[in-house]
Length: 155
Image 1 (cartoon, helix red, strand yellow):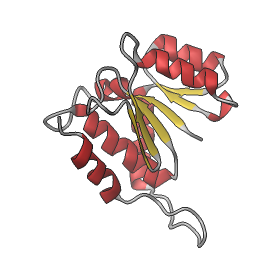
Image 2 (cartoon, helix red, strand yellow):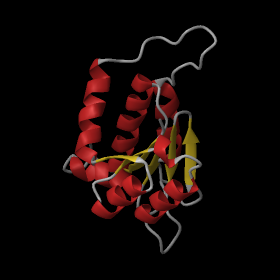
Image 3 (cartoon, helix red, strand yellow):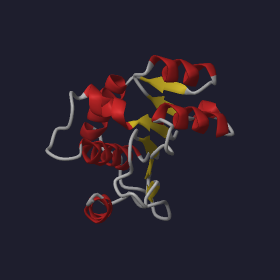
Image 4 (spheres, helix red, strand yellow):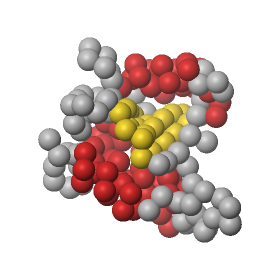
């Protein structure tokens, strides 16, 4: 089940960044670890400018990062993603924004508050996914995400 995550809500639910610098990078690291452990896919939508001006979004294995166009916001992008889904019931939307949370549920998607996702992610860290069977997709390696962050988070 793919996750659509309001990245700023997730960061805010932690009380801000756990490390110095751009807290969005920490969100990306935690979501990537969750996806590896659960074999899940996620799209993180952040408000504001991309990590680098020429990148409006980025695909990194199991995790995608999107930013709204100018004069828009993450909430609008998330609603558009729900509307564009062939089967919204297969999405899990993570947002503490009441309007987005309600919209997701109304359209048939599963919805979690940011703190609920954080609790789920803590459980995934303690119960990692088993090694995939032969012929299945390999889990993403930490170096894949770390390499992307090193390359694209510089301004």
